[in-house]
Image (tube, rainbow, N blue to C red; front, top):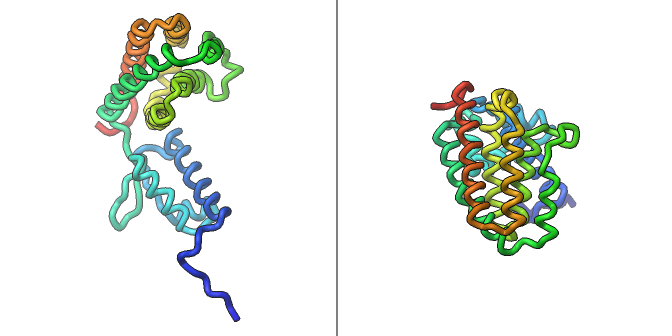
Amino acid sequence: MSQILDPRAPESASAKLLREKVYEQLRADLISCRLAPGAEIRESELAERFGVSKSPVRDALMRLERENLVITLPRQGYRVASVSLNDVQDMFQLREVLERACIERITRRASDQQLASLERFRRFDPGAWEGGFVAYNRSFHRELAAISGNARMRDHLFDLMDQMERAVQLSVNSLKRGNPQTVIDEHNALIDALQARQTSVAQRISARHVQSAGKRVLRAMTHAVIAP
């Protein structure tokens, strides 16, 4: 007798893993701009690429739509969400607020060992960072979020930095022409203030650092093909 499958049966572990892999790869492609802003996305093409049915692809695209990385086109499919100057300005403003809160928690609650872990960011060695200066800078700010001790704030900052990565990637060629030592010096000043547990000083340095980064990215983005 053939077995009747219950549609309410829980999804197998392998099926869940497959869905997660499709989602993670698509998300990485969007954040890195390997799938360029404005590009059309078709379920059938992605299903063929990943060697899966349309179901895990559709699931991934729905999740990415909720993250504002993908836009649904009625009766057409999907499109990669554009990156606008207004969006980037909003993200940098939110990041400034969140990092300010992180700074307060770090100076008051982080252990001496956690503060000492920031020493590795005092200099940039190109050979030590796969992904170059962008990876080094991103890792520094992720470390600050991690040692804040607030998991929800950390996760929000991680997600926000992922979203901002698209703008950075669009402007990366212009950023490469800048002087990375300026950013490294700002990191060092912030590390000094954090290790001295000078909350207000560290917050002022952090705010200026984020504002300067925002100006650099926005200036570079004006030369990229983006949404107005």
